[in-house]
Length: 76
Image (cartoon, rainbow, N blue to C red; front, side, top):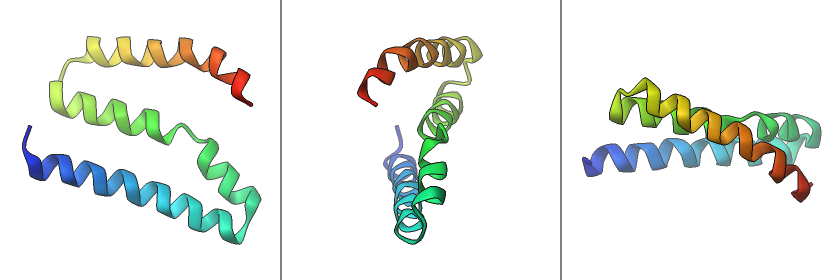
């Protein structure tokens, strides 16, 4: 993988997290709304498709995410 591409992904993903935390400083409700969106999953599926261009692999990844949402509810 190209290092420039990897750094770009990291910077974009970090910017999303920083933006969400800055919104949460101003309004807890809007910050919670932004964080509750499945942004990490959407970004991961986008990066996976851009890297592999394999829709079957992206679909399998999305299905795995769906099945792991249920046990993750125990953390709340």
